[in-house]
Length: 610
Image 1 (tube, rainbow, N blue to C red):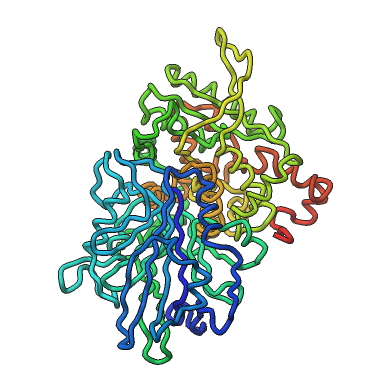
Image 2 (image 1 turned 120 degrees about the horizontal axis):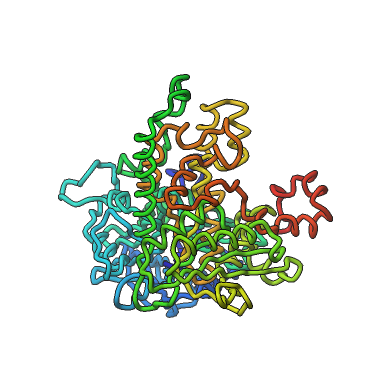
C-alpha cells in the first residue's frame, strides 16, 4: 500500500531462538549519557512521505513493568515523548519503560472510504500493513483489505508457543495460520495486545520490501522499515533484507536482570501448498528420449497453453483492482520494453481493463530512439494498436542522461540499499525513472506520429514482468547451465533464481518503484501462476537446445502467439540495464569504456563508498 516502519527502544532483544550463536542484543542506552542515532523517527517518516502517500500516521505503545514485573501497555500519539529523552530515562522510580513507535504510510488503492494507518482497534491491537489481499481471505471489492485483515487478526489466538497445528484448543487459528492463507504481496507489523507480542514478516516470495536492523553498537534500537533513510547508507550492513516469513517478538519483564525483554521467534508457514511454492520442486524436469521426440500432441499442447494463458489473465485481472477515490484516466500502467513479458502483460491488461481507460506504457532510454528497448517499444505499441484499436495506448518515452542524474543517483543509492553493486544501481535508476512516468508521448495526426508533447503518467498501479525469466528459462546463465549440466542443471539453476529472488530483486525493485507513489504488481509471481508452471514438464517450459528467441521462455512465446503478438513472440531476452543502455553509459562513466568495465566485472562490482 505504501510503507511501514517500527522502532523499538528500551527493550532487550533476545535473538537466541533465531540465531543460536547470538547473545541477547540490547536496545537500551546502557550507562551512556548521550544517545546518538544515525537517524531519527522523523527521518524514517520523511523517507516514507517521499513515496507520496495519501496519509501518514504514527502511534506509540509505552510498555512498563511495576515492581511485580507485570507488563502493561498504553497506546498514545507518537509525538508525546522525545525518543532520546525516553531512552536515557528508561528506568524511572523503579519502573521499567519501553517504547514502540509504529509509522504507517498509506497509498489507498482499494476501498471506498479513506483509511489512515496505523489502525488501532478497541482492544488496543495495532496494525500497519503494506500489501494486497488477492485471495485467501474473503474480501468484497469495495472494502479496504487492511481493515478486513485487522478484524481477522483480532480473532487469532494468543498462544505464545504457536506450535500447535491447525486451530488451538480454544478453537481459534494462529497468526501464522492466518498469514499463510493470504495470496498476494505483503509486509506487516502487528501488535497483539493480549499476548504483548509484535508479529512481523513478509510474504513467502518477498514481493514487498521489509528491512530489519538488529540492535548493535551503531544503533541500539530494533527497527523494521520498508525503506532506509538516506543518512543510513553510509553504514555498511546496517540494514538487511528480512528473510521471508512470519516472526514474533514476545515482550516480557525479566525477573533475572530487571529489564524488558523481547524474544524473537520465526514460525513455519502452515499451508502445505505455500511450502511447495517455497521448495519450488518440479515433478517432471528430466525428459526421456521419447518425450523429446514425440513431445505433446498439438491438442494437448494447445490445452496446456490455454491453461497458462487463463492463469496469467486471472492474475492480471486481480491486479487491476483499484479504488474509485483516486481514479485517473490511466489507473494502471505497464513497465514496458516492448519485449515478450511486457507485451503479454499489456495485451492481458487490455482484456481486463474497461476500454474507457487509457493504458500508459512506460519506457526508459539512455540513448534516445537508438536504445534497443525504445526500438522494440515503438514496434510493440504498433502491434498492440492492431489487436486493440479502440484502446488509447500511451507510449511514455522517458529519456535520460546518466551524467546529469547527480542528485537522482544519490537518491536511488538509498533506495537500493542494502544492495550495492553497479548492476543494482543501474537497474534501480532505470526502474525509478520509469516508475516516475515523466516523459513525452507522440500525438497522432491522420495515423502518423507528428509531434511529441510532455506527459506525466499518474497511474498508481504498475505491472512489472518480474519472475518470467526465472520461471521460464530466460537468462543467459540458464543456457550456460544447460550446456554444462543438461536438464537437471537447468532445473536447479531456475530453482536457485526463484529462491533468492526476494533478496536479489524484489525488495530493491519495490523500493525504487514505490518511491514514486506507485505500487508494483507482479502477475508472473502470482501463487497460482507459479504452481501451474511447476506442474508443466520443464521441456515444455523451455527448450534450450533451440536458439535464443525460440527455446528460451518457450511456453510464454506460445502464449504471446495466442494473444496475436507474433512479432513479440520471437524477440530475444534483454535485461533493462542493457535494453535501456544505462549499463553502457555507466561503464563509460565509471570505467572509461565497456571493454574496461567488462574486464573489471563492473556489473557485480561493489560501489565504494555506498
